[in-house]
Amino acid sequence: MRGAAEMRRALAVCALLAGAALTVFLLSLAVGSVGLSLTEVWHALFGLTDASGDSDAACQTAVAIVRELRLPRAAAAFACGGLLALSGALMQVLLRNPLAEPYVLGVSGGAATGALLAMLALSPLWAVQAGAAGGALVSMVLVATLARRDLLHPQVQGGHHEAGSRLLLTGVILAAGWGAVITLILSIAPEGRLRGMLFWLTGDLGGTASYGLALGTLVAALLLMLPMARALNVMLLGETVAQSLGVRVGRVRLSAYLVASLAIAAAITTAGSIGFVGLVVPHLVRLAWGNDQRLLLPAATLLGGTLLMAADLIARTAIAPAQLPVGVITALLGVPTFLFLLLRRPR
Amino acid sequence: MTTAADWTIPTLPCPQLSLHGLGLRAGGKTLFDALDFTMRPGELWCVLGPNGVGKSTLMAVLAGLRLAERGEVRLDGEPLATLARHRPEVLARQRAYLPQAIHDTFSMTVHDAVAVGRHPHLSGWGWSGRDDDAVVAALLEALDLAGLAGRDVLTLSGGERQRVSLAAVLAQQAPLLLLDEPLAHLDLRHQILVLDTLARLARGGRHAAMLIVHDLNLARRYATHALLMAEDGSCLHGPADEILTPAHCSRALRTPIVAVAQGAHTALIANGPA
Image 1 (cartoon, rainbow over the protein chains, first blue to last red):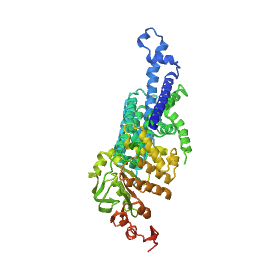
Image 2 (image 1 turned 90 degrees about the horizontal axis):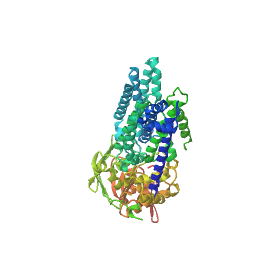
Image 3 (image 1 turned 180 degrees about the horizontal axis):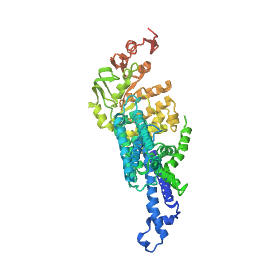
C-alpha cells in the first residue's frame, strides 16, 4: 500500500536526520579550544559528581566546559535552527510563496527594534530579550489586525482571489518600516554599542545562556502543527480547494500564522535574527523528499537544528579564539545554496 | 473491488440541491434576484451565459464557499450555509467543487494532486489506504492521465492540468458535482471524454452535476437541464431542450444564433452581426 510505504519512508527520513543531529550535537560538545574525546564528553555529561572527590582538575574543567558552555550553546543552536526552519516552512504554505521566509511578515523587524532600543538604554541581557519578545509580539499583532480579513476569511470566488498576496504585502511593508527604525537607532547609537548591536542583528549564539524557552517552544510548535499537516498539504492548492475539501481554512491559517510567529519570536529572543535557515532548509527538504507537510515539518525542524549547530560550530572554531556571528556563516552558506536551487528550477 | 473503492459510487446518497429566492450581488451590482429551482439526483445541468453575469459566483454559493445576499440554498432541506459553517467535513463528502483555475506554486506529482481529493475520506494522519489508492489509480486511468502519474504539475499543459483537477474532484466521491468550466483548455476529444463520464454518472442516478459551459452544442447534447443567465438579471431554467433554443440563446448571449439541421443532427451556430 502506498500510504504505508510513505509512512515508512517518513519515519526513515526522520530517523536519519535525528542521527545526523545527534552526531553534530556530540561534535559540538567535543570540538573547540579545548578538544575532548567522546569518552571525556560522556563522562562530563553523565559522570557522577560525587566521584569527583579525588578527580583531577582537568576532569572538572571538562565538566564545566561541556555542561556550562557547550551544551547550552549547542542546544540553543538546535532549538533556534529548528524553530526558524519550521516557521519558514509554515510561512511558505501560509503565503503560498516559495520565497517566503520567517522574517517576511516583519516579526523579526519588530523584535530587532525592541532589542536595539533596550541595548540603546544599556539594559541587561534579560531586558534585551524581553525587548525582542515584546517587539515581535507587537509586530505580530499589528500584521494580524491589519490583514485580519485576508488571514481569517480569504475571499473565495472562482479561484481568482486568493488571500496570500495582501497578507504578504502588509507584512512586507511593515518590515520595511521596522527596517527604517532599525537604521535610525543604529545611526544615533554611541560607537561603543554598535558592535553588540550588529552582532545581535546578524544573529549570535555567543551570549546565549538559556535554551529552555526555545526548546520548549519548538516541541510545542511541532506538536501543534503536526496534526494539521494534512490540511496544510491541501492548502498548497489554494484556499478555495482547501475549503471545498472541508478544511476549516480560517482556523488553519490563523494557527499556522500564530505558531510560525511565536516560533520566530522564541528563536530571535534566544539568538538574534539569524538569516537563511528559515528560507533554505524547507527548500532543501522539499528537493530531497518532496512537499508532503507530514514529512516536511519534522524533517525541516531536524535539518534546521542540525545545520545551525554545524554553522555555530564553524562560527566559534574558524578563527578561534575570536568568534564570528553565526548569522554570517548561515548567510554565506545560504546565499549560494539558494541561488543554486533557484536557478536550476525547471521552467 | 469493494464499493468504497469504486469512484463511480458516492459514499453518501445524493441530496437535492434547492435554491429559495436566491439573490446575488457582486462588485456593487445586482446579478439576479429571487432564483428558485431544484436539482435532483440523475440530472445534469449546464449553466450558460455571457461573461460577468454571475455564473461562477452562483457556483461558489451553491458549493457553500460564499454567502448569498438574499434567499438561501438547501441540501435536502437543510440550510447549506449552516452545514458549510459547522460541518464542512460532512459537506465535503456530499459535494465536490471544481474552481475555474488552480494556481500551482510548488512542485507536486500528478498522482499526489489527484490524491488531494481523498482528503475528506482520510482521518488523523491520513496515510492513504487501499481504497484511496484504488480510487486514484482508477481515475488516473479514466481521465487519460495514467501516463502522467509521475509528472510534476508545474510542467503540465493547461488541458492536462484541468484533467488532473477534474480527477481530484471525482476522487472526492461526492454525489453532487459543481464544476466551474470543466471543459476549459481541453481538446475536443477530452471534452467529450469528460462529458461522457459526467453523463454516465448522472444517468446512474447516484449523482447530480452542474457545469458551467460555453459550448451551446455540447450543452444541448449532454444536459438534461439548463440555466441560461442574461445580463439583465433574468434567468431561464428548465429541461435543456426547452431552454437552449436559438431564440432564448440569441437574447441571453446577445448574439444572433440560428439552428442548422442535417439529418438527425441540429447545431446552433452564431449568425454573424445582426
